[in-house]
Image (cartoon, rainbow over all chains, first blue to last red; front, side, top):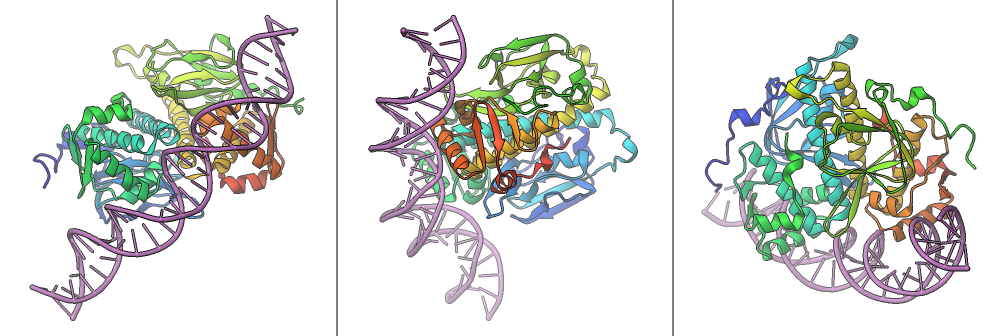
Length: 231
Length: 231
DNA sequence: CGCACAGTTGACGCACATCAACCTGGGTGG
DNA sequence: CCACCCAGGTTGATGTGCGTCAACTGTGCG
């Protein structure tokens, strides 16, 4: 039972407005918690996320996992692969997903990519890095509740930018375990923090639906400033 | 009392091998713990670090500070400023520094920068982002000792790449307080962790000199894989 | 000489982890 | 259409890594 207008986004917003998104050809579907790309693996295609959520992640030898990015529709899951054909990190799905495959120029003989491709890469890379630095601040210096609040503010804003969120709600089918691995916490503590946020009347996350009952308060708590998300 | 050959690096290595580094004009000197750039501030120049260490950082309203990057000679402190003229984060010195100023194209009228400039930006941005993602893994999922070990492995490798470190030692004049703000810890805990690493015979940091007594063991402890630092 | 900044150390507290049940709902097959 | 299953969520008891507070110790510099 989602609000009207949340299921589908205009093609215009979804293609990210650049050459890269338009370069996607074949579409593929993935189930939740599947790997799209393994670390170090070379591949002739990069992946444009069309629906659902994916993540970049890294596993330590004893099984600890850290998610370093959560992708929303319109994002390119393995951005650096567009340049080099390989990624240092693994890419996996969080929910059911459909992704488009972007053929990667073999880049043989040192022929540089077209300037508008480079420009698009630059813009996306800059934004990805800004998001990563914001996550660093959270993991290093914010409490569990602040971290969660900040992540939700960010995700809502990014989803709104592609027409997948209203001012105070969006579909967000992330498990508490996946949230924990993104936030550097455990699922148990994510659960308790969500309860705290809900009892404080700030927001609820239930059945895959995120509702912000008091978005201004939430953004104040998280010290959320959306300017880093601007293209 | 540093080992021979650590004080000066070949120009070749220091200029980063690309157009951006060669574009530096005026040199300026800074004392430790000074701001080079405030967040959101526009400026007609970007800054190439020539000697010393600087950092990108962010302050929260109650004074908590998170350092999101530590720069070494050859790095550009405010990389995104080369594109937009402004940075979201503050840049400050950690030690005494000398930096070169790189004039930023006003980029008026939508004339794109030269292709070799864009290529250099892309390469540096990609590397910066790889480092940031590695830090995310540390802040989210590594213990204090592992985090410190990983940071030192990374910094030694980056310094070695510009001729400022030998296989097992380098000059590193960072205060424990600055380390703490980079690692998401307190200076007290950094102090205790350093003692642990020293008593384990792995490494010492004293008087601005980092010595790795057992680098293989240190890299194993940190699960350090230097491939993400490759240009 | 004395101030200021950095490092060191100990006592104590807390946010978050760990461990372990138990609940819940939706998917599946008989 | 029910019986079962199982991934995900919830909750309580307990543990611990790191924070906090506070005092003391260098150490370089004006």
